[in-house]
Amino acid sequence: MTTLDAAPADVRQKPPVDGEPCVLLKLGEVVLKGKNREQFERRLADNVRTAVRPIARVDVIRRHGVFIVRKHDADLATMDRVAQRITDVMGIVWAHRAWLVGKDVASVERAALELMDGRTGTFAVRSRRRDKRFPMTSSELDRHIGTLITDRYGQPVRLKDPDHTLSIEVDRDEVFVYSGGLPGQGGLPVGMSGRALVLMSGGIDSPVAAYRMMRRGLRVDYLHFSGMPFTGPESIYKAYALVRELDKFQGGSRLFVVPFGKAQQQIKTSGADRLAVIAQRRLMLRTGQLLARRLRGTALITGDALGQVSSQTLTNITALDDAVDLPILRPLVGMDKVEIMDQARRIRTLAISELPDEDCCTVLAPRRAETKAKIDDLRQLEKRLDAGELADQLAESAQEHRPTYADPTSSSTGSAPETPRETVT
Image (cartoon, rainbow, N blue to C red; front, side, top):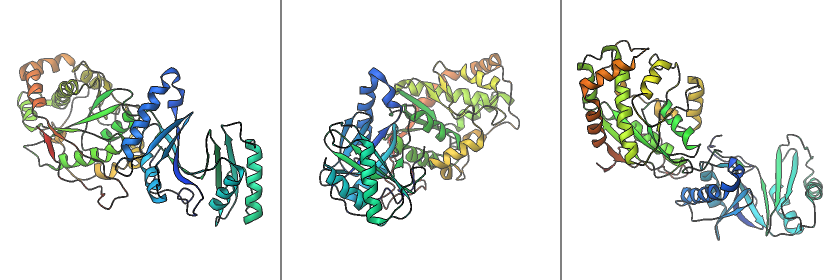
């Protein structure tokens, strides 16, 4: 699933319809949750309200399998923006900018004719009658409205792959009429699966890993290791910009930045040689585990993909797992670079990740990395370094930032990094 830059012509309803503009949301796997479904739907409704609050305070009405988003006296442009924003909320499969009309055949006829006015090409009518008290069945309503449109505008009906689909949903108290829709993200509502900490580099992989785990219901915080004082702040700006973009999927994101350069220097001077890369990553994981526990996180997330770089061998991944007790989630482990880049492009993080910076992992790195690191050798190295104490110091040095997603319809939105604002030290 992806978020679209703008709603297609079918979604932005141009003709004025004698009804109330609203947004009709279709849910995904949330509806399969059995006895826990109520809890999932409540969380999802809360997430929808929170996401659109900067645009409008809305009512989210839960019906069987759908949500109705309404706002008293809302104008068409506002509900268009609400629909667009909701497509970033995990758990939503489709957002339809619909018209709520009276529960009578005459109101449905007027809305259908107004929505199809000015359109060309083939069309089909798809009706769903959730309330069986309505005087027409779904198939009768399809034929009746289809005949009206053909008689009025001369448009031909085509049931398979029509140019336009007019949808009519008869609910308990009202009828919804719409054409087209915006695809959502699918997945589960953020927050239903717990909390985890993402080890966020400035590269392409870790933002995609964060996205994929948010889509599985995890609320995530982010930890970035900069090469400072041996590098400039560019990687921090990139991490900040990436988290700000990803914040649209959950809201309230927190980015923790740890200056890692001196720790890398200690590893290099300890005689690590080819083990330096794996030793650095184990230290990052140790630091991440300490921070995650303070944040009530129960897992770490990385952008590892098996075999993508020389150090990401199965032996080395096993050696990394040995460094911490928390589970390490690797949602990209079986993906190739092309797949990861495609997803980064869809979630709009690729352009930020491709900005130049000096990554901390390249600072003081050996010319060749070990591909078959032995756990015993790494443990001996960590004893010389007193890695536990070093990880404590690094976790204590973390600075917290709160990158906030900007509404894409506002004039101030942009993808360029801005200077991070420190909130907690």
